Each structure stands twice: as C-alpha cells, then as structure tokens.
Image (cartoon, rainbow, N blue to C red; front, top):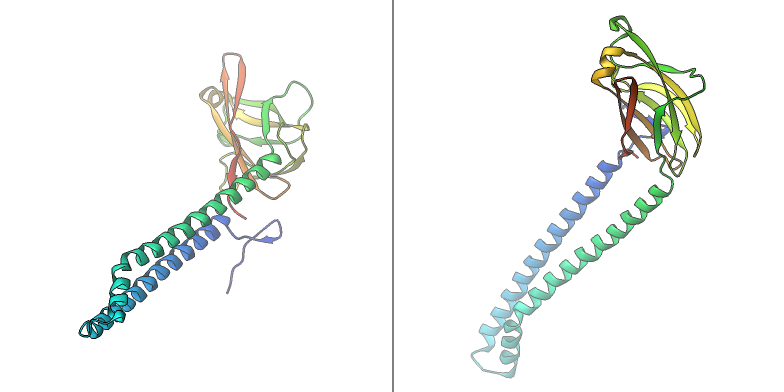
Length: 235
C-alpha cells in the first residue's frame, strides 16, 4: 500500500530533499568523472612509456617526439584538473545567481503579520493559549490585532498554541494593509511569566512561512514581541 501526502491539493515533495538529491548526484558525477579521467591518464601514460621503450633503441625522431610528449604529461593532467575546477566554479556561480534571483522574488511578495494589542473592534475568533481551559485559575481574554504590513497577501493556515502538533486551523486571507481581530484565552499568572504562539501562512507563490510571537504582561500593560517570518522549505 502506497501512502501519498498532499498540501493544497498538490503532491508534497520537500524542496530540501530535492536539492540534497541533486547535490548528491553532482558529487557522484564529479567523482566518477575524476576517476575515469585518472584511469585514462594512467593508460595513456603507460602506452607512451611502452612506445618510448620500443623506439629509444633506434634513437629516431619519433622517440624524441614521444619522449617530449611524456615530459609534458604533468601539463596535461594539470589542464584536466583546471577544466574540472572551472566547471565546478561555473556551476556554483550559476546556482548562486539563480538562488539570489529566487530570494529577490520571494522578498517582493513576502507577507509580514504584525500582531499588536487590539485597540478597538470585536474579535469573533479565539484560541486557548497556555494551560488547558480547566487548569486556568484566572482566565483572561486578550484581544489582539493581526495586520499584514508585508509586500503580499498572507493565506493563514494554522495557529500554533502548543495544544497539538499540527496547530489549530486558522484559515484567513489577509491582504496587504488589511487586519483582523483575534482573542486568546490565557491564565493571568502565566501571562506574567510570558506566553508563546506562532502563525503559519503562505504567500501568493505558495512559499510557506512561520512567524513567532511572545506575549507578556508587564505591570498593567501587555506587550507582544513579533519575530520575523521564517521560510519553510516544503515545495
């Protein structure tokens, strides 16, 4: 029985695994190429030495020519090594510029979800953060505002509160400049120590990110520290 995984109705193929597989193929190709080149070099050198031994008796022009060729064998091997190094250099240069272009394209559409305390508006969606509902001694509702201040829309997927491994479903599309209100049910004593949550989302090109937040009550105010989006290599 074959099990297949999909995300957003598309086959799940981790990009990282693909890159590692390609890198392994390149390394094995270079090893095989160098091994074959060295083997051929040894065979050619052996043939040259045999030819020199046969023609040296007559001291002919041919023996002198073959002897000269043998003396330049180091240059031939050096040229092969230089060619291989040049190939590797060109390959990684092309790869560097390709990844640089991909990074620029990613930044041009990357969202950034800024979470602050809500100053107004009513939150209709919320999550329990920290202890389970039954264990909360002093339940407190914290209203927050999530605003997209990035360069492209964010299709939110889940909120990681620590309740489960995959997070809790949070399906909202937040366009640039748009904001939505959300609330968290927390324990007041835990809030003084500090609470942590994460929001996972994708951009218009299905690049997936996760952003971390720390919430803490200091004196009479609640402060929220926003982390930067962390790119998840999954497609």
